[in-house]
Length: 170
Image 1 (cartoon, rainbow, N blue to C red):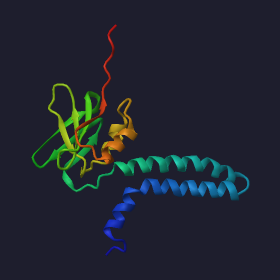
Image 2 (image 1 turned 60 degrees about the horizontal axis):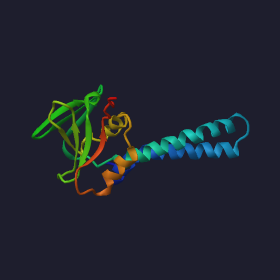
Image 3 (image 1 turned 90 degrees about the vertical axis):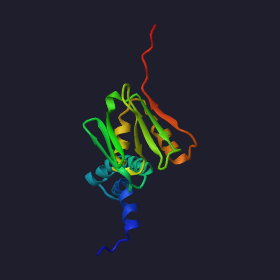
Image 4 (image 1 turned 30 degrees about the vertical axis):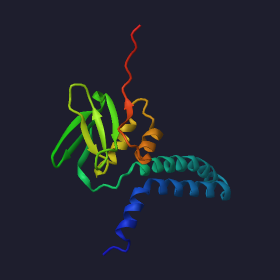
């Protein structure tokens, strides 16, 4: 028997990284302002670390889509795989050509496209889809704030989040 309602536990889990970062930043600020000697210096060092963790945790929490959707996502050794009730597939991140968000599907999907392969449509609320945040963050030049805004923005048509840049020919 749990003392915390499941909804509250899910919210705490979603915001865990941000809460830990805020707690570390608060502890660092307290030590920096109240303590003398080495503990004061430790506090000044802990403050920016806590702030960075809180910032990263907020971004990760905003990406979270709740889970419980169709299929399971895994990210392993640079490859994204989705196993769904009616299909699935895998794409290596190094081969990825374009990343789109298609809000017209129910549920909305991330569409991963690689040359010579069928697009991989991953529901944003698939089990394990939170791992996609770190996978997508490795894409060179990805605009993370744009991705988060589009995910929460209620777009009406598919939108390209990231596209591999092509070398220019002179």
